[in-house]
Length: 372
Image 1: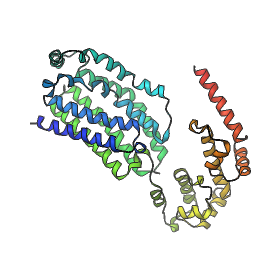
Image 2: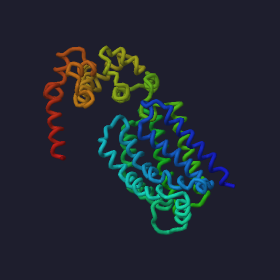
Image 3: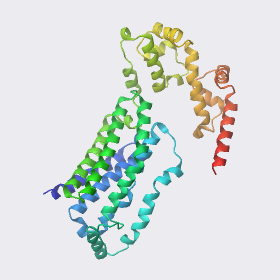
């Protein structure tokens, strides 16, 4: 009776995954998560067809996606690592997919067999207790071993992102909880699957889990697409800071100010004034003035320019902005005056922007040379 549900659930997973992957804008869904979702949908479809007996007609599909199923764990890690535009060298990404490449090479002899030999191989592999590649047993155990290997790294990246967003983007925090919960839930079910020797009812549970996960991503992309990237629309940022002025103590307002600067990056606006900032934060200009004088012991423009200098430093070292001049960086960071820019930069860093860029680039080059 359960077999009747395999094919529709598998097709539903594949359709949802395909729509999510191919119709979501590139800027809204990182490549790592896009591939993760697509593999889940296709794996669900293959699993359902095999369990429903489709392998008897098309033996080739028996282990069609087993090599790429091994990519689930590294894709989850890479997605978490790359959040908030964290850079990750291409060669390191390649290392994560080395087991996938080995598995693809190892499965070639099976794909070169004729249909009768493939079917016989599949039927024999179902009754073997020792390792034989390809086989369902080996695929599951390799994925479980990868789970053990990646678990500490996934948890580290997860905790780092949770601390990073620190209630600033609530919808993104919920999404991270859901993603990591599904990740560990998937491996838990695979463990049960291995222990119970691939019972059909457990496979159906895996399919339903995959369907739930893919559906949740589709719903999230419809309702709050920027949550996946750890961002929210500017209008919602303003609303999130609409605390009552009567409840706004100076200390609390100072904390809100720091967090608002990190989230909105309003300091990049060259025309930003104290009145503009107080309006965005739903507070009074007078209270904000008291925060600067009594809590922070610095003026409004000194405070804003510190953030602008930090932004300029990041832009100066950004490889994608190497073709921009120091003056271009100055404008992008929110400064309108060369003298103010150089004065603040040198006061905080002890060198001019050009010297800072040259020194850091030379230091980075020497490190790379030593690494070779």
